[in-house]
Amino acid sequence: MEEMSKRFSNSVFNNGNAERVQLKRRLLSYQVNCYEPLLPSTYTLLMNLLKLVKETGNGSFVNLQPTQYEEWVVKWKLDLPEQREIFRLLHDALTVVGKGESAIHALVHLLKLYSKNEAAEAKADAHQCIVSCIAHPQVFVVDHLLDLHPISALEGQLIHDLLEIFVSGNLSDYIEFYDNNREFAEKLALSHEENMRKMRLLTLASMAQDNSEITYDELIDKLNLEKDEVEPFVIEAIGSQLIRGKINEPEDKIVVSSTINRTFGDAEWHLIKNKLEVWQRNLLSIQECMKKGIHYQMPIGAG
Figure 1 (spheres, helix red, strand yellow):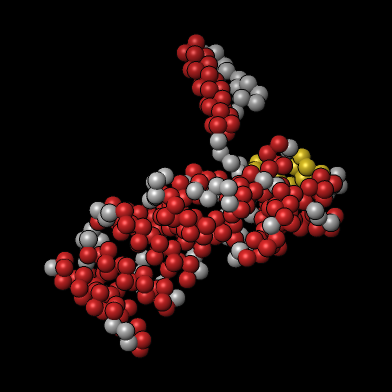
Figure 2 (spheres, rainbow, N blue to C red; figure 1 turned 135 degrees about the horizontal axis):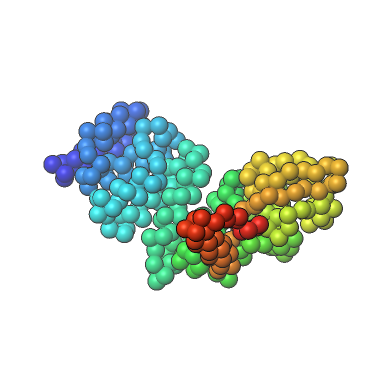
């Protein structure tokens, strides 16, 4: 039965008549809906449906959630080449239908399927992943990419240098990179203007990590802004949720209440550890005071 299902699916998809795309889509969709997702033959069905999505640009007839595919490949007990094949095709299908963030999710999962010894095989995918993350207007935190073996395999190349700037660099780093490697940068499927916009936002996030107040003059200096551009820019930054805060217009400054962490490493873990230890001590003190019937007052700044 399983083999018959696979042969039928492949036969439907391989029918080269372009006029029968709608019919192929309906037949394969009906077949998927009639089968349990646990059945290994569903892998073949979904592969053919993803190919149709890639060909037609229409993804309304198939599940395109990367997290669902992560569950399915485990249940199907696919080998690594099969897992890579379906996630690469899922990325292509999601890209065609304009679901950029989900496409990046699928591509990152694909890169995780390569060991250090196999990393060189996925250099093209790694390059595409970096470009896609930089290009996406709502993807800001990309430090996790540096831990992927295929990304590490690009170390020493200009594309890896560019990624490191978007991980932890600032606007001046990007401008220097662009000026020194203009030919390379212009060959990438990236907009220099959009890169400048994103790097301004990321630079502000880094500034906000070290300062609860930032003056307009500092923003003008660090972000290459004109004075009349500062407030619209800060409003955009707050709207993007990179920072939280408010504008103090009379004093020409912004007051920051919180910001994203562009990188999360040993320093950030140490900070969390210290906070948890403080909370633990406070809870123990509260517990002791309650046992003794003593009113306890939380120390200022302990939370």
